[in-house]
Image (cartoon, rainbow, N blue to C red; front, side, top):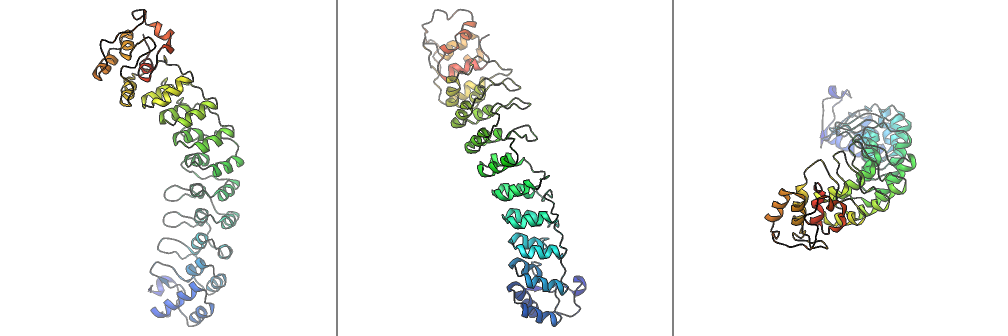
Length: 400
C-alpha cells in the first residue's frame, strides 16, 4: 500500500491524495494506462506519490517500458531524480530492465547517467550485469563513466566478466576501461576458465602475458585454479610458459604444487623448464614433494628433473609427506639400497630417525660395493635411485 508522504517534503502538489487514489494512480503507471493516469493528474493527485519501497509512477512506468507514460509524467512535473529506498533512480530501473527507449528518453530529459545507488550501482553497471548490450552502448555514448566502482570495488567490466557477457566485455574494452578491478580482465577469465571471454579479450589486446599487481600472468592463474581449457588457449595465443616473476615462481611450480597431472603434462609438452628455481631455489620437483604429489614426482623425474638439486631450506617434510601418501618405507634401488641406506650414507641423521620411527628395517642389506665410498657417488649416479621416498632424500639437500 502507498506511503503518503507529506506534500511539503516531496515538493509536490498541495492537494491531499487518498490511499485509494494513490494505489489506482500507481497501478495505472505500472500498467501503462495513460487515460487513467491523466485523469488522476487532472484531479491534482500528488504525482510524486510512492509505494512502501519508494517506487513512484516514473519508476514503475520505466521498469515496464511505457515510453508515453514516462513522457507524460515528466511533462507533468514528476521529479526526474527521485530515488527509491535503495537509492535507485528511474534510469537505474530502466537500465536494469533493458528498456532501451525509456533509457534514451530519460537521458535526453537530463537524467544523471552516473548516478549511484546506496551500494554504488550505476545505470551502466546494472545494464552490464544484465547483458543489455544496446543500453550499455547508449550510456557509454552519453557520458557514462565505466570507472565508477560499487561499494565492493567492482566496475561494469568486472561484473560483465563475472557473468560471462562477452559482447558487453568487448564493448567496454573498446571504449577504453580505466576501472580498477581486483584482477586484470584476462586474469578473471583465467580464474573462471572462461575461454570465450578470454578469446574476446585477446582479440582486443593480443598480449597473453599481462601482469597482475602481484606479478603473475593469466597462465599462472590458470595453473593455480587448474583450468585446462583457458591454459591451452593462452598457450596457443603465445603465453610464455616459462614467464618468471620476481619471486621466480613459474606456472610449472604452481601446477606441481597443486598436483594436477594433466596441467603438468600440458606445461611440459609446451616447453616448461623442468629445473626452474624460485627465489628460494625450489624446483617444481620440490613443490611436488613438499605437497606429497607422488604421481607428479614420477612424471617430473621421467622428464629428467634433477633429483640432487639443493635448496636453502630443510625438507624433512618432503619425506614425511611421501610416507603419509603411502610411499614404501623400504623401497629399494636396483642394488637393494633402501631410503635408510641413503640417509645413513649421506649422514642425514634426522632423516634416518624419521624412517626408523616409521618402521624402516635397520638391518636391511644392500648389494653394492660402494656403500662406504665417498658421498659424491650418489650425486654422480642419481638415476640409480628408484621410488619416491629414496628420491626425496636427495631432494632434501643432496649428499654432502
